[in-house]
Image (cartoon, rainbow, N blue to C red; front, side, top):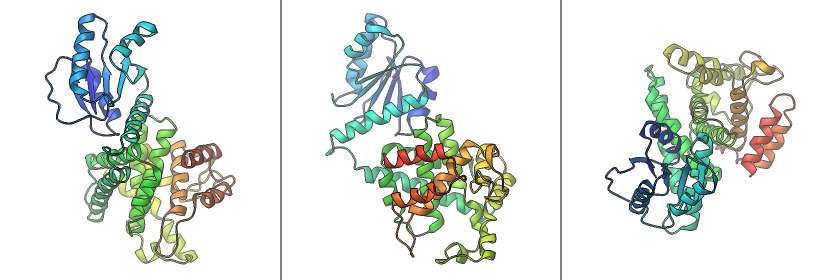
Length: 353
């Protein structure tokens, strides 16, 4: 995508917001720019307040928009009929106020890009290929994180940032069902599970309108939430039958182990640490490792807990078929008093919608 702007001072922040959908190039109004390939969308963050600026903007758009089916999102600086008239003269597909929230802009960009892809299926990349590519990127980064942790090396913050970006890009560019199909093809249980949780958590955070920063926090925590299982015997983790009481005690150590690993390294956001430590806590205080409940469980932790349980129910195992979404939600709704019912209803609406 391409962002044409006369406000370079704010363009970087806007670029950071929208490029979770796909890479974005920023072009200053009047800047020489060679069109290398067709863009999926053009975002116009310009105030065409004078005839000269309006004429220049039209010329730049004509160069960056070789095909009329490419949508144009105009971020208007003014309101009223005059501003709408300018937007129409620019060929804008959609108009939003320039001070709209990052989440609003992101969702509009995603909607316009997806609408064009649906309208031109012969030239648009198949959703499965787009999502699969980002799943591979996220999986490769996740494997790198696990490798670092196994060898006692610190996890690169930049690497984890790229992992969260890949997750958000895949969620923004595809459907949940597509992600599920791709991730279920992996045999490693922990690997499959963490990528599924990351998918559900990132999608859920977007649907709730969390800021891009909040979405990144959730995606990072989802990728890291089960790292403590690196120190749990694989025979226990992969056991097809019911765990013994002693084995369950071992498994229940993983949140505290993972939390300690991250604390010892340092540099992780306190909210990420909280989600890693407490994603198995329940509102009624019956969870682990600390047995906290009620208001002591933060909203982002509650969100991750729902995604974690749902992913465990619908993922494929060598010894069982994936549970249907309907049956999984029946179990979740049966956990009365343990889960945030409002969040659960919102999550179900997102998945089933």
